Length: 232
Image (tube, rainbow, N blue to C red; front, side, top):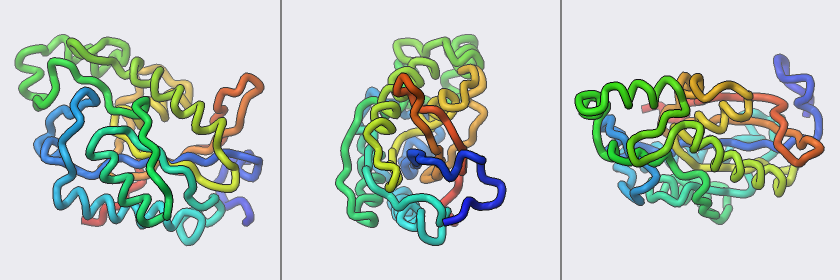
């Protein structure tokens, strides 16, 4: 397959392709509440399951009519939380892959903010919320920062890329902060900027990596960021 117009000059090289899939919506997503990695639930809503099926179909189409120059989906990894495992199960059914849970891709631990809306958090922790959102290095009370998430999730991505077959796409089902942190780390931008990426439910973010001499993933191309799959 020829390199498409507008692609990175490195796109034809021996690269590892990773697609990051955000999970479908839950009751907390729809309530705009913080739903972190320290709590297994909640499950997808009915709408979230429909979104997961649409995302699964989009992943299946990679290498066909959706980004036809990329390899077809292969290894399937997921955060071990209920909503990501349910979303990953939909992807696995569509692509014929077994889901491998990996706790390094879990969502940010929001600590004392778990289950609260931004308005409720701002009412009690206005300075802490502002610092968490803008610095990228300040932690939620009893929880993590963007930078913390980036550190652990990057190790998971590094291992996935090192083990990846260039002839197939590695799929990782994860969360908003996790995906933002991975993209930020890949681009080498400061944690203070990671929150600027929009990651809709069941969107696809597609990155391609080479391997540096030290085994670290070296970003070669951003194919898509926050690509929506939900038409509803």
